[in-house]
Image: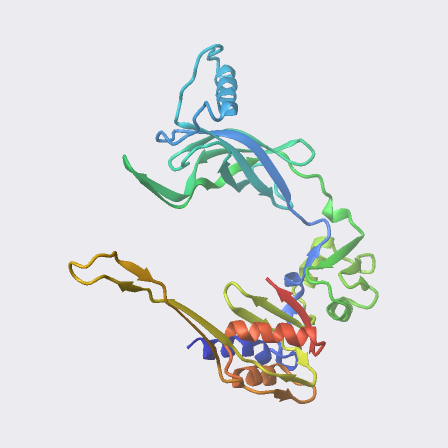
Length: 367
């Protein structure tokens, strides 16, 4: 059952060979230089927990934060001993999207940093979110949707998921905008997510064919520069026109294996030179069969246990040397490996050995 499914999965890249590949939009291949998000971080308190918050003895920073919040609200608790179990200290993270305007709302993630057991049912108190420059760009507040559940009794408890982390959809409101005058730029740089000289050259040719020669120029395998001066349009309009142009991508030949799950992915450009492959297995069995010896009835003596061990080594029938002639492609590689009748883990070992022999012409990635 597993081998036919694996063969189908491995043959999928062959069905997408360059001659029949579907082109991809430029917007799915590149990032526009300067159009990026910014990470935000804040420290706050979650209140309203059902006795699942921080124990203030183990998390003294939570008590300090409670005191500071209450003092800002006009409640003097200096010198008092606070023993609240419905409060938890958390870190709040979010991403400020590009071109976000004041008043817009963004999602935030809340994670406990003390010994709180669950954030379910809690409410995040007003928390400022700072960027790397130390400025406040958003303020977060709202009810938390936790990602797990905890059930406990007197003698045992059970936890499913991660109840100490959660999200607040649209939980932060943007208060400050990032200063970036996109409409005044004279040139743009397109950064390829997967740098490749062939793909970059095709992007350059496609843009020049659509907008006119001299607009796009490939700088390296990961960058294509756009000169906006010959184009009588705003940068936003140029990006909107460019990002929907379709180009045919090109990637390096890769073999990716994951030994934990037994997954093998081979790219359509993988080639194997002339090589001979032999595969076999050894099975070792060790069984303990102790023998109990007892004296005859009414006879002197005591019961004795005599150890007995059976050890066997079995060698599976070998497949012999399978000769791979010439430079073969992906379908021939899969057919040849399946013809050997090997398991997925053995197939991974064979690919490793072929790579070590210098006959596998692809980048070999082990996860």
